[in-house]
Length: 333
Image (cartoon, rainbow, N blue to C red):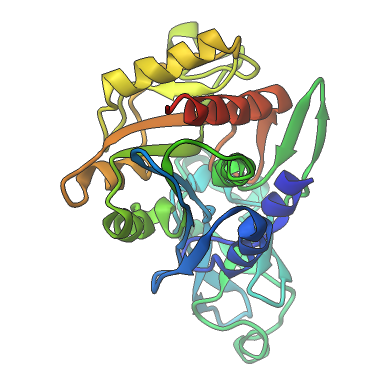
């Protein structure tokens, strides 16, 4: 399964090479041109008439970077992207291209003071343990600047759900790859971008290169449809279809464009939902801010437990997002 292959690939911000290689091979038969720019973005062109449309999905995932050796052979590290420090401890990670396993260590609760038990934890409280006994030993196999990612295995979660890592935004990458397999009446560009999780850096370059008339970001987005979360705080809900955003931290999405997308969904009997939150941001913020700007929108797949070691999505939401993107692209005459 394409999504499984993408989810299991290693690709935190700044280290997207494995994901890039998979995508280049997947899209080669369906596009007229593939370019990899100096940042590492893939920019693919499917030549056509009509408006210049840019579809964007980012390749990077949240992760960690090794910053220091401790004398006892453990490692200090920092986050790559918005990984809440609360979700990191006691997780297994792979480190670097050699996939060395480590465990994010935390002082046992039995040894914590009353204050430590009730205070928020930070990365200063953790280390990564690979089983080394000294700084000299760990230096032989781990370099400063190596990345670390969660070791989560992709799989079926039951009831039509999937669990895995990096659904933000490998799910968007998978939707975009599927969309490229068909032909449309527009001049279509696809950007698979780097370093979104640390500030849309790759998309600033790809957007400047393409200068689109219309930009659509394909994302995995926040979902908190849990019993302890009030209905009005649930930005999206699993199983209710692709989420169409109104606004986020970096963009106010073009009203005419989003209404057209919703009409296409209704005419095609594709379920959809509005994303009822303005938190976060994505590469649409780069598309709308580059050159003379562009009309932008975002279509997302709801992801439970996003930016953690594991996310959960609905197969139906993923498939309906793909259907909606294709139907919208076919609406260009």
